[in-house]
Image 1 (cartoon, one colour):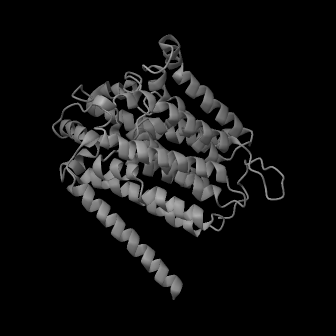
Image 2 (cartoon, rainbow, N blue to C red):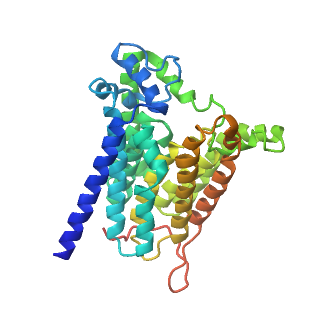
Image 3 (cartoon, rainbow, N blue to C red):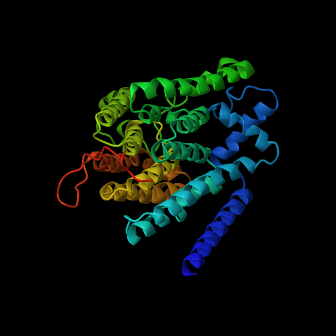
Length: 390
C-alpha cells in the first residue's frame, strides 16, 4: 500500500510539473531562436525556400521544416512539442535512475535536481523553445534502443531522424555498430534514410539545403566554445589563436577517432564511447552554443541509466558531468539572461566563458576514459557490458 501511494505521489508530481511547464511554454511569447523559426516556417507554408537568406540563416534539416504544419495550427504548438520532448527525457531518466540499485540516495537526489530545477533547462525549453530539445529526445531514444534494448535498427532510424533535424548527431553513427557486418547493414540503413530525406528535400526546394551544412563553419566562434577564447582579446597571441582555430575540425576528428579506437578494442563500452565522443566535439567545436548541451545532457541521461546498472559505476564521471550541469545552470541559465545575453558591458563574458567550459569538459573526458576500480582492488577494462542483465 505504501509503495502504491509513493508511486501515485510520484506520478502526480510528474503530471503537475509537466503541466505547469507546458502551460508556461505556451503562454510565454516567442523569443530568441524560436521567433526566428517563424520566418523559416512561413517560407515553407507559402512555397518559398526555407534556406534562403533572411535575418538568420536556416542551419537545420528537412525534419525541422515539417514543424511548419504544426506552426500553421498554432504558432506555439512546435514549442510545446519541444518542451514535451524534454519533459519525456527528464521523466524517463529520473524514473529509470531511481529504480536502479547501485546509485545512493544522494546520487538520486542530485540527479533529480539536475533535471527538474536547472534554470538552464527551463530557460532553453519553455522560454527560448530551442528545437535541440527535440533532437535531444531522438538521440536519447536512439542511445537506449542501441545500448539498452539492443535494437540497432530502431536506434539507427532515430539517429537518422536526428541528423535530418540538425546535422551534428552524425558523428555518433560510428559508435552504433561493433563489427563489419553490422557496419554494412546499419550503415546502409542510415544512408538510405538520410539520402531519402534529402532527395525528397531536393525535389521540393532544390539544392539550397546545402547552405545549412556550411552554417556552423561560416560563423565566428560562439560563447561556450574555447575557440572564442583563443581568438578573443584575452588570449595572449592572436596568431597562435587563429592557428588553433584553423585546426579545430581536425582536433575534433582526431579526438573522436581516438575514442573510436578505444571503443573498437574494448577499452571503453558503447554508451561511454557515445558520451566521450560528444565531450570531444564540444571541447573543440567552434559553434559552441548553449543549446547543444541539451543533447549532451540527454546523452548523459542514457549513460547513467546504463552505467549505474553495473556494480562499479563511474562515480567520478557522474559527478564531473553534474559540475558541468551546475556550470551551465549558472552561466547559461542565470548569468546569460540577467546580463542581456552577455551583451553591452558584459560582452567580455563571451570571450572568456569558453575557457572554464573547456576545462570542465577535459575533466569529464578524463574520468570517462579512466578505468574504474573494482571493489576488490582490481581494475576493470570498463569495456564489456555484454553480460549486463536487462
